[in-house]
Length: 350
Image 1 (cartoon, one colour):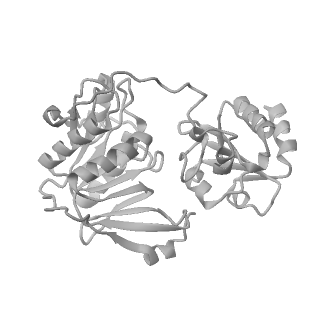
Image 2 (cartoon, rainbow, N blue to C red; image 1 turned 120 degrees about the vertical axis):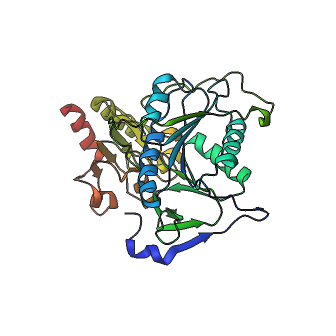
Image 3 (tube, rainbow, N blue to C red; image 1 turned 120 degrees about the horizontal axis):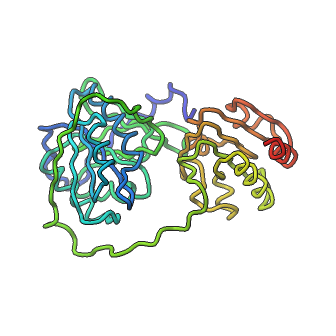
């Protein structure tokens, strides 16, 4: 756990409105919006459905509507899936391409928000979401709480309670934003998506055009990064190397185990900071949040920052020479010993 529940009341604070905010946005519609991030191919990312599941629960508490907002050119299958996800409305602004253009995307969503006045806007704490959401917040003169791990509606006021790690993950801070719309980003895999089901409900579809206010610059092409293996955020099996592996030879052993299991290789922050693995493979508060079926920690101490990124794993196996390491205390199976002996044995077994 990042913090004991009794510590939460000790760190309850308010996020005050920014200076020069002007008038507060009218809450006449009070809908809860989800920014549906899409890939360059037009497919809606899984984070959208995670946030929609949470938005639907929040709407039950607040009695408000829900909507998904997509900017770009979503493919037909994704659009149909959004329409049947349980939201009341799907807004789409066609920018002519799916290249991520944060300025155009932000302006489109800001124009739409000024027109329909949502009470809450939720976005993913992905690379794109972290670039997009602050721009929207500035345009709407409101606050933004980043990397939330919990969202609830306050019964008395109907305001959004936004919980996130603070002080390096040692405490959880619950934040209230006094300006509207209330905005928050949520890390992938914090909330589970709803299981696909046929409810018979089809969302209203609204196309909107904000091209008159778009900035003039455009992205004309993009070069994707070289694929260096499975995305750790989507992997069902993650094998993570900590500084206990020692060096690059230790990393190779852990990587071999990951390949044997059909899983993805990951690393703790010290491993990444020491150049043994690239940042895209970092698990933790400042890296990627993972939620695999099996998480194998090799030489990982289990700092609170690391736990923030993997504690939602279904089954945790820890390999460490220190029986008192924190990771050993939270593991479902703890193997105490030299990983240079244990990992090769596991490789031969599989």
